[in-house]
Image 1 (cartoon, helix red, strand yellow):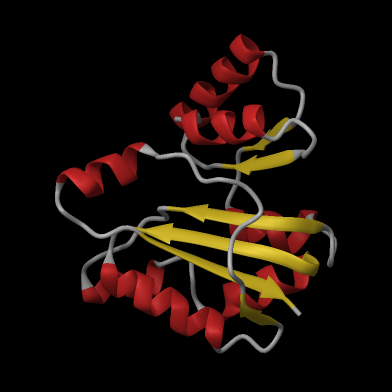
Image 2 (tube, rainbow, N blue to C red):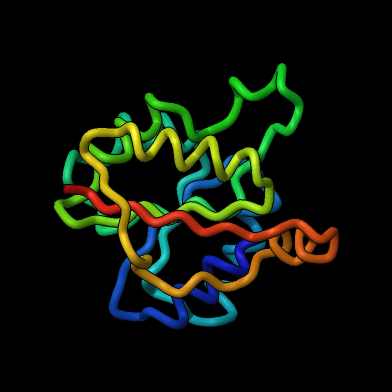
Length: 159
């Protein structure tokens, strides 16, 4: 619903952010927060993230990509729907500037292992010690912690 994006934008006014979301209420929630907080450093694209990266973002243009609690698609037969796949990692790496960061967070241990494996196998990425911005808790993180799920942050840097 935009709370995390708005918090990050407030905390990092010197950086510009593009929020990509397909969920209409999420876009509306973020628009309300942008207006209420007077944020001038956030733009929103309501569209599929893969298509936005592939068709709207030039190679080497991004300082960071943040994937905070993407849908884990926990059933094995649905794993193919997960955002983080080898094709996504290759695309994301191309869109990052040299030394740009991918920061992914999840509360699903098997998805964390999967994402780590995918990013480790992308030749343009290497492990990084930290992210571009501080990650504020999302409602998905809060729910995951309440359920006892471990939270895992993954950081990779464009070579």
